[in-house]
Length: 103
Image (spheres, one colour):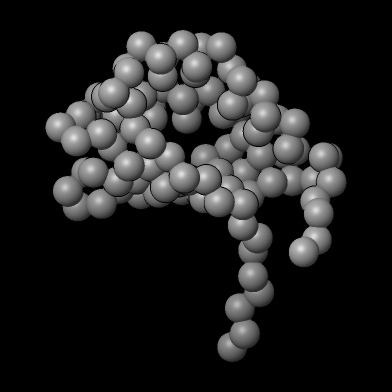
């Protein structure tokens, strides 16, 4: 497995599961945190949602790992998440890479 450098671009897939009965609250939280990406060198490339609104999938690119770590530690993001308590969505983040298509 190749280790990526701290200054290399980072591509992530975030699978966001809304808390049961709290889809709207979860979507509002995601709106808030995704708007903060640019402050940390991140960009939302794609945001999708299941038909039942219970899950979202985000494709996010950061200019560096340091930017991603800064986003995770963002005090406003952390505070908003703590305020939601059990209504906060859970997220699984996968580091991915682009794959050339063969045709």
